Image (cartoon, rainbow, N blue to C red; front, side, top):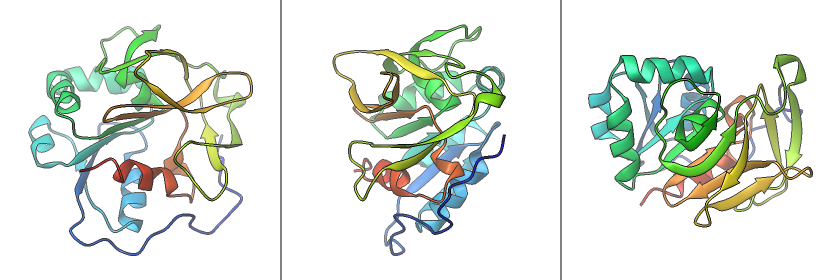
Length: 209
């Protein structure tokens, strides 16, 4: 199901940055190109990350949406698991969107391969149903100004429980948590990269020292 923002303009776009950080996007599967495009619009140096050694040169990392079981398998196959855990522990910002949030979670329902398990959240996969139940909702996100955010949910997970140290940034009216932050780790269960709104990417960039 293809869902696009009703607003064709770019929301939250800033002037090109000087001394921009280098942000990597894990490029094993999923929506990594869309994240790269958003970063390019913000004037941020970005790299598609396909080998663990490429993590060393990054100031921050995005783990994109996609198929969580496939990404988890490829993370193991290409030797990313321990380097990703070390990256998360280093204090550098890491943002997981949809499948990326699943990989960051400490506990995941029905994931048959180990994830990064760096963030003290529990996640339920496919919490909103299958592809046919994909939807878009305008949501209020703490830290995002200038109105609600057009959140796109495609076979999305939900955050069902969080540690006391985790900051809940957004929830739906039914109580499902859809965005959270813990120290240098950010998790959103929806797809900001499929909109024309760069405000969440700006929020993530603000986490870089």
